[in-house]
Image (cartoon, rainbow, N blue to C red):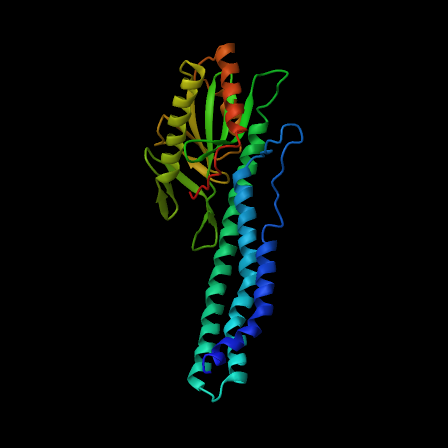
Length: 302
């Protein structure tokens, strides 16, 4: 029966299929997320959402790197089986198997390049978030000042990087990582000009970071007013670690900083006065929001 010539070579694919199953079972073996031993809530550090995305990126890299050779070899192994069971040799068919192997190899090469580039971007973003988080930690001196900092606060379909609560207002701190441009002379150009609606980097401009920061500020303002029962002063802050900021044309509603003097800038800022009751209510609301487990994880693409 002619159909057996195509069915029997599948036997040679069983070892590859078993290896692929093992790879799929091991892809989530490394999970860096930890939970509190006291209340089982997930423990969150600065840049936790980026840490989670980085873990998933490494899992995808492992999957593409391990499955790539298996999937690429499958047509070749099947073709070798066909050569054993076929009554006559068809060189066009063998050439198709070889072409399919080549195509699959190219596809997985592109996937690996994509994974490496994504991991590189995520590492840069995590480094910037950690730098800003460390700077914000300098605000916390419970014995002297009522400063509180929350990291990765879930918003309405997105995650707010940091929320800093001071006696004089609440600050929504968004962090964006961008690689400085290289001039024809080989020097880094890390100067960015802040305008009302966009950031002008060397060679390109962006509107989304300012828009996202304003969106997060508006949401937190409305949400806190609903939770606390009274309006509280909130201001958006966009941190661009490693950049020199030109704020000569910057808008008044946002604060754009390089990140190095962020703690000093926020300590000196005076948005308004928070009475003790409102201050404590804000802390309680943000603490409950930041520790909620029923909110889905959010990926940030900007």
